[in-house]
Image (cartoon, rainbow, N blue to C red; front, side):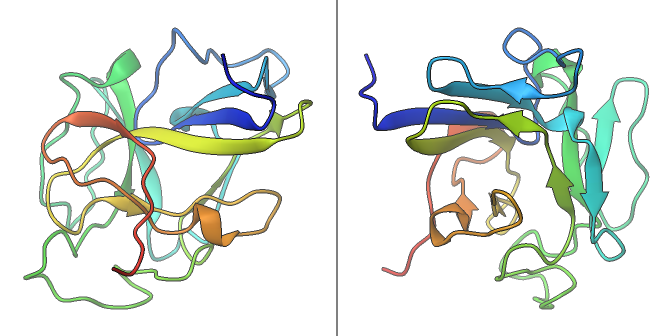
Length: 174
């Protein structure tokens, strides 16, 4: 059992899981016993999307945004849908790194999604997300709360490639 100080904020960024996080009638995802589960597809607003934005992929719709560099990954996507940040021109170390275009070391500068979440139990929450990464530079995101981007939510990163995987790691200097 979790202590009162340990809570889990489960954000299904990139992949959905209908069994955990059906969209509530009022559009607000509620914390229950220290856990909040949110499907990535059910954001209520996207901002700063002129350079890079999130696009829904389903069996009925695959976005045609270039460059992309990889096919759709629907085979094991929970709920048969996921979000992908496009265009994606920096997938590996060999691709040119262009800050403000395909690389955002500072959070909140491009492709920002907003979710209605109500947390009634105070405490420390951990973000877990299920993502699909295809290459060495196609594997990170930032997470904020109430318009703030705390250090603990910056540079979340996944290292397993070519499969859907859960993770909650932060890239830090070694």
